[in-house]
Length: 201
Image 1 (cartoon, rainbow, N blue to C red):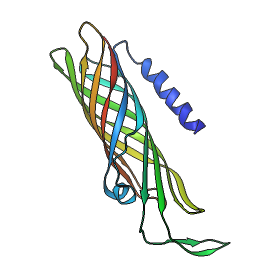
Image 2: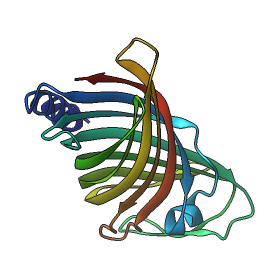
Image 3: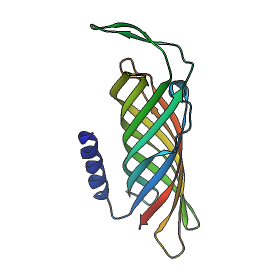
Image 4: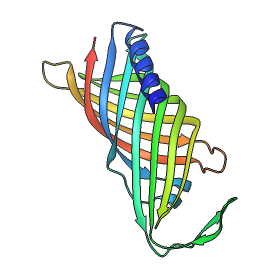
């Protein structure tokens, strides 16, 4: 995790140095698993956070970075047995499963903005990497996988400043996709983000 914190700090520092006009947001993402991720955990997640920093290079175009953390969890019963096969033991384990997925996307992004009165509607996408930890606990047995994979995240959103202020509400809809890594399946989820932002002109 130490490497993740260093990357996040680097993204935030370099993003702040691109230009004087910038948009910073901190968001609470509500994640809806899709595809293989939904097969693993199909429960909506209300746990997570994302921080974005963007600098405007023209009046309508920004480049920047995004760091997030999605925490998914589900308790599952009556699932098929899980197989164990290593040098020490082999066999099947059955019982109540506790499934976990932690996904940390670290992305560079670009966005285009449309003025709507004093608000900003925007759309864009991010490219980068996702660090993921998947784990299943069954009784005293634990199956886990840690991996880095390529990540992609298109997004649409809306920033509405409060009256007489550069601070405002930020709303967004994102689709996060991470490629498969080794035996780990791809990551796929929609995230509805609600948060606060600061638009420095």
